[in-house]
Image (tube, rainbow, N blue to C red; front, top):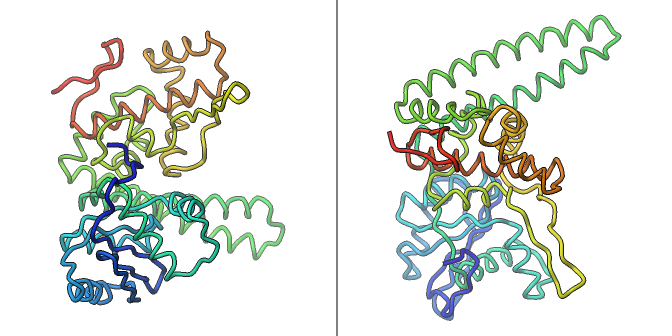
Length: 333
């Protein structure tokens, strides 16, 4: 069933959560009644939320919250472990849903009710938490990316600094960041090698010409394994083309948006640049598209689209890449 399909009969019970840094607002839709409460965004607060749900006759209700990054991770993980089926909704879909209802006001209480209504009337896929090994790798990779950003900023300041004392201060910070960055890289490699599944998947991904160890590590850390197929993975990363058509006047393909996982999009874009010229199969695929008049950027995103689909299938099925097949296929070990 499509994930955006409207249910013919709304769910009898749905819990909507509006997450903030310190607090979370809850709205429990049960039959024709709506119950509201506010809790701390902490483990004790989530325990109190579960007690409150049971008080209103909902042991483990279908739970929907916005994918708001780190603020919502604790609630999603704890409630999933407690037996709740959880969906992490794209905030943009919640915003569009509010507009479709003609809502003009916005408060945390209203947002929680809106999220609950959205979850009760839509057929949505259940979220699956990443494995412990993937969570640790994701945290290490994102910390490494943060350090790289800070290091580049300090290097840029060093180049433009004219004061001797400031230059010495910047040099000290750069040395500390370089040392910490190298330490993190060692931890990432050690973590992957210590986990047989991650180690095997890394080897499979690196068989694809265009994907190196760094890109493979990002794929291991970020790609969710519960998605049904490669097309869903490409849609999750938001690298699928969007068609705009209305009557006889409007008929075009909208550009690729900026949604999707920013870490993966960045590294896969660079991988696609390499694969466009170094991967024989993807080069042939790209050349065929270019021959039809596609722009360079359209061809590049088509290669990126192929890369994420192939990578996802290797990760989901734990299979090896076979470059000799045409069209691109994967084979079991």
